[in-house]
Every structure is written in structure tokens, then in C-alpha cells.
Image (cartoon, rainbow, N blue to C red; front, side, top):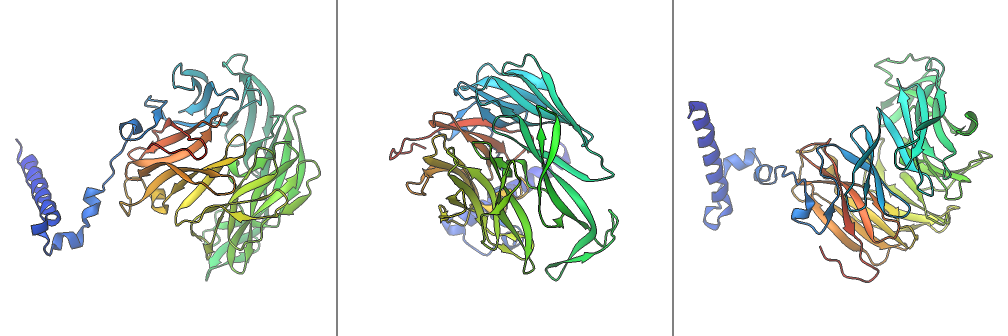
Length: 435
């Protein structure tokens, strides 16, 4: 045995003995070593749990070494569509018969037609050329249906955001620069005219957020609406959502109020572009989600300190016109929810803010991520899963069409690019949960 190896083993043994002494009743004594290095760093170090079935009442569907995510159930519940690395894949709902349907980098906005017979997706090249594709659910008859090219010298184009319900249109955002630069001074934004991109003293560029509709059948675009100037940026694709009847679009939009960033939920008429602000809470209102019947909108709300520090997101719900707002969750954790197919229940992921830190560098061994279900009015909350974040993180989830299961993405914290899909059963209303 080499001298270096012997030395490492000796040090490891001493550390093990020291930790044991601290945790035995007769060994509770001053520990200078513990003052420098907290014991929980060693005891609660990352313990990646790739297969949740070892400890939890769930079913694992994907087992490949690839990164599996972005799952979508087929309308009949027999298939699950998902992305695996750069491939679009499909599998039976029990995880069998995995099939690679298409490949391409990057592939975005993968979705199914309402009847499940077609798969739609987007590919882009150099961030300027966008192509929309369609193929049969088995991967056959792949066809490009529309193409759009942006001109970077004129506008700042952002990724296309959301398919319409019938998959014939896409809403997208363009940032039109005003020429002003922005920076933060004493907790507020300061503006300066005629700032060139790349100016380190003025790192943010002010832009007008303009929304457009791309008609895929005609391969034509039309202006929809615009908002007041703000820092160049964009909402995430999942935050821009069409109503079930395809007539309206809900989205968040930021604004400056009293030196702080606020974000409000707006609804836009998809034809006229007429818009209505639905929220007034001074803070962040984000991630709108229409109920299946289109009568209500679920969203997340959080207080914010200054320009950047968000507290915790709770789930709220309101009527589609902004009335009858009601808070459904209230906890120190972050929540994000999804309507059940019949609109009677809401499933939500709840996680400690510490779970969002760098993998393997958790600040507390108590951090965890969970899956809960509740009635649409916030009553009868049931916890389905609760997993320490030093094992990994629960991510995207989606109800099965019959509401009996929830498929979710599990990310072991040892590798951010190795996610797998699992399924957990959902108890019927008033039923007991078996963990």
C-alpha cells in the first residue's frame, strides 16, 4: 500500500472516530474541529438516489443513462411522450416499449395534437431560423409545416413561447430596444440614453416587449400587443398559456413600482390584442395556468425584497376575469401546481429554497422536495412524497388523463443531466395515502 493511501486512510479513520465520539452520549465534549467544519456537511453530504423505488411507493419508468424529461401523456393514457437527450421518445405508460421517434438539436416545444395522433415540435438554427415540424405519433411522415427567420440587426428575438390549443398558431415575444441602458443604484433602476450593447457600466438594455402571433397554416405573422418598456428579458415558455378555447392568452409581465420589481398576470385577447391586468399585489405574480373549463386561473404569488430577493411562492386561484382571488397554500416552502384533468383537484410540488442551490452544496439537511394533492378550493391536502434534497429533486410533473397517477421527473443531485421519469399513484378523495 502506498504511503499516500495509508495517510488518507488514517485521516478518514480519525474523522470517523471523532464524529462517533460527538454523537455518543459520553462523547459530548468541546470539538474545535466541529467549529471549523459543521458535522452535517459530512453526515448530510449528497447521497444521490437514482431509483426511488428503493425507499418510496413509486414506479420508475425510464432507466437509461440518458437525460429523460419534458413528459406528456397521450390523451388515452396509454403512452408517454418525452425527451431523452436530443431525441423525442415515446413509451407505454408502464415504461415498456421505449421508441426513439426523432432526433435533432435543439428540439423544443414538443407537444401532442388534441387527439394524440400527431406530434408537433420546433427546431432552431443559430437562434435565428425557427422551423415547426409535425409527425405521426409513431414517428412516421415527418414534415416541416412552417419556417420563420429573425433579423438580429433590427430586433432582439426570443424563443417562441407557446402553441395554441389547436396547434395552428404560436405566440412569441420580440424585444425591441429603446436605446436606453439600465443599471441598479441604491436598490432602484437608473436609465441612460444611447448605450451600446456590451457596455459594462450599463449591463441591462431597456426594451419594449412586443407579442406576435405566428399563423402556421398561412406561415404569416401579425402583431398582437406590446407592454411598457422594461429590461430586456422574457417569460418562460410554460408561463405563456392559451385558454382551453384558444381565444385568450395569459402571461406575466414585469413592471417597476417604488423601486421594486413587480410582476402581474395579464390576459390578452388572441384576436384583438386587447389586454387586461388581473393582479394588483405588489410582488411577483407568475406562472398562470387555466383550469380545464377556462373559468379559473391558478397562479403563484410571492413577496419580493428590493429588486431580486423573492420570498416563497404560494398557490393562488382567481376567476378568469381576476375576481374572487383565494390563497390555497401558505408555507415557508415554494409551491408550483397543476390542475387535474377534471379540474376538481390540484397537484403541486413543494420544495425548500435550499433545494435550488448548487447540487451537492445544500445548506441544510432538512431541505426536501414533495408532491401534494388538494381539492381545487385548497381543502383536503394530502402528501404523496417527501424526499430529502440531498438525495435529489422532484421536478416537472403531469397528471394522467384519468387522474389516477402523476408522472414526474426525478433528478439525482449527483448529475444535473441524468434525470428519470417516475410515476406515483394518486389516492381518491378522502382515501388514505400509502407512502
